[in-house]
Length: 239
View 1: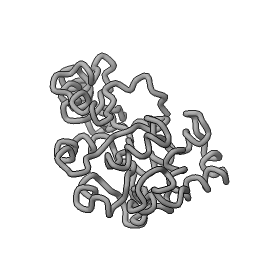
View 2 (view 1 turned 135 degrees about the horizontal axis):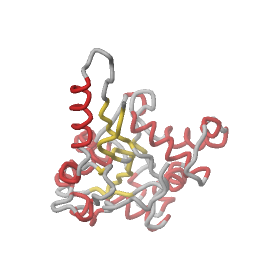
View 3 (view 1 turned 120 degrees about the vertical axis):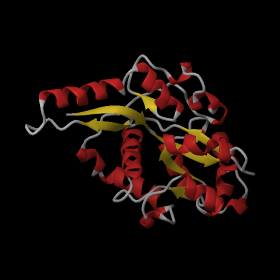
View 4 (view 1 turned 180 degrees about the vertical axis):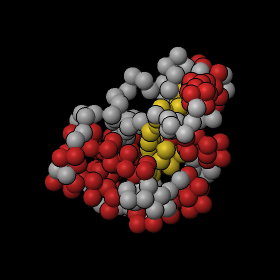
């Protein structure tokens, strides 16, 4: 038996200097279609930014190695088709594959694997202008990033795909009924409000619907609203 205990979502992260140009060009909600347009613009000067920014460079891991990249492609398909329900046939659609290839082609580091905010911290602008990262990883680094010369801004794609962190309980015959009940009780315990409050403070989103990140004391989702973090996204369109 597998049950989710914690949640997170892929989010976009841009350097503030790049985000300010993109929001003037595309509006405050920078989604996958804006990213695609930026990759096809042939230089930041065509987006209203300075020419010395060079060409737009996207950061996304290799989908064969990075689960965040896979979820990102799912999000991108939702944006491309304008709906949250995506099928395997949609992912193979020639129009969508062309759309996604254009975005991935702008990533100079695609083949290397998975990426986190540590890579962005180390390499800054030479690594890329913005990319898709797991929200939990982003929240862990925003305090440090707020001190950078060019800090980070967070935006959310048109649709969000939930990445859950499950607890798996093996119900095999080799375990007694008492042991199974203890495991089930632990699974219920980690989903109680006090434990979910703790998870929120650590940067995860809760599975317990009675817990809202906006209402949790010392919530990083509230602390970083000024850089674009959205505390409660239950009303956003999920996939």
